[in-house]
Image 1 (cartoon, protein in one colour):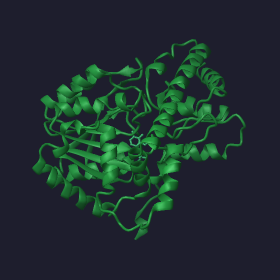
Image 2 (cartoon, helix red, strand yellow; image 1 turned 90 degrees about the horizontal axis):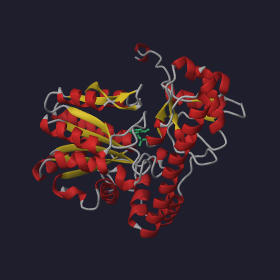
Image 3 (spheres, rainbow, N blue to C red; image 1 turned 90 degrees about the vertical axis):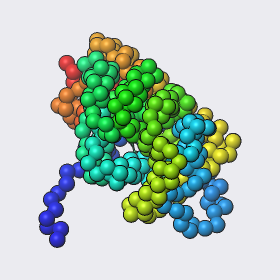
Image 4 (tube, rainbow, N blue to C red; image 1 turned 60 degrees about the horizontal axis):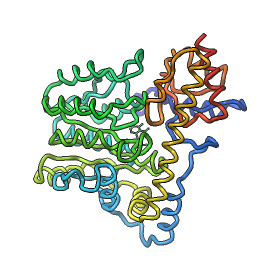
Length: 395
Ligand SMILES: Cc1ncc(COP(=O)(O)O)c(C=O)c1O
């Protein structure tokens, strides 16, 4: 049976990480995989997460199943964090389902869309996170792109984006990065979000928002502004939330799918459908990460500690942006100040694939093939080396 299968090429970003680990150079720099790194280049477990985990391990009396929709406490806590305490006044039509990470939430959302309308198209930004297209496409959705980023101008190409959305047929689904756009770091501002919301509403499009980095851009509140602007404008919306980055829970697979269903009756139907779909995908989502998040968010002291740690992460990334932008400008004699205005873990350097390979092979600096760099991989110690190496390959 298996002879019909052929070798699948390794994931481009994950293989960069493997190559980095094998590299024995003392000057090597990992700007590849999108995980937060501290000043020592380590991906830490936040103290609040560690404390919550220890308390749970000491107290937990059973590991019996919860339900296909997961941990209700986690679902509500994360929904309030994402939408605000009053859940946008949409408590009656909001449906929540815990999922294995943001990826699981995206997949569950795609399955719900497919069940509701098997022929509908989903439109993702060009460029987008490398896993969006396979993840959504493998659920059976037809995936297309809309213009998003102008690589020459280092900003969102808003006119082309709005024009493309305006041309979509009613009912089409539009995937939007709620904040910290991956791979460009280029977000919409509030005025631009309002223009997008207007087109979505006028053309009866369905937004599917991917919230994978809340708190790592500006702060929790400002990073959630996009959701509030869009949700006010439309009756139906899906949101995939990941707790991988902001809680440092990557391997615990902790995420949430939230669906604004339009009205309470539809919410009841959608709840039953999400339960059915989750049951056929993973039956029950993993609880450990969700139990930790629920505890961190519901206990004032842990919540405050986590909030301080998250603020530290965001501040560190934003100050590294400034350091790197200045050093790149100095080394290359070109303007890199646009890196300072971007947000989140990523920026995309204007490099060809050959230049990316040269940085890897000759300078031991690892990044995604499209020039995407993880800003958190920069440190005050390696920033000059990175900037001078980029200048050398650009000569
Ligand atoms: C834009 C975006 N969405 C979703 C995810 C999925 O995150 P998770 O690890 O929680 O599945 C990622 C992870 O890198 C991402 O960058």
